[in-house]
Length: 146
Image (cartoon, rainbow, N blue to C red; front, side, top):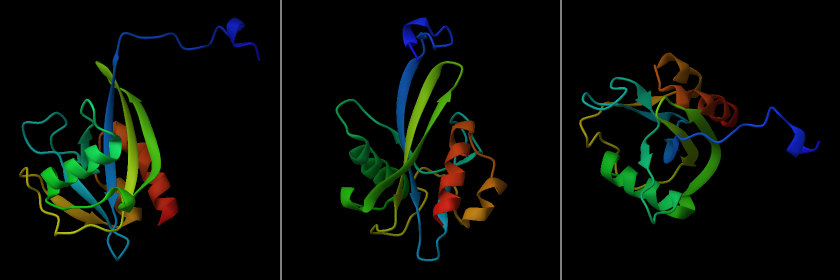
């Protein structure tokens, strides 16, 4: 197909791209850790995979290690993070690109350090928890894996 004549090709938008990394911490019982967005944050009350924004100068794995330390008080290494899938989602004011990593090895007991609730969830129960729209496409690959 000649893309120069393809009129269905997407045109650029003025929305900024936001890169956010997420992690499925998987315990020995194949449960996945979810965190509930705390009051005062956008989408408060929704459940999500831990993670956060990639800052300027960071690579995704470094950002994820930092976010897991800040949010949950756990430590891990780049070698313990394996990319599984990603989500690409358009919100009103920005476009979100979110790679999802899995992690089965970390040090420390996860706790909600930002006053967020956390919960270990069986893969087939993930859809029982209300999540941001961008997180929803990440569920099936996790269920297929586990």
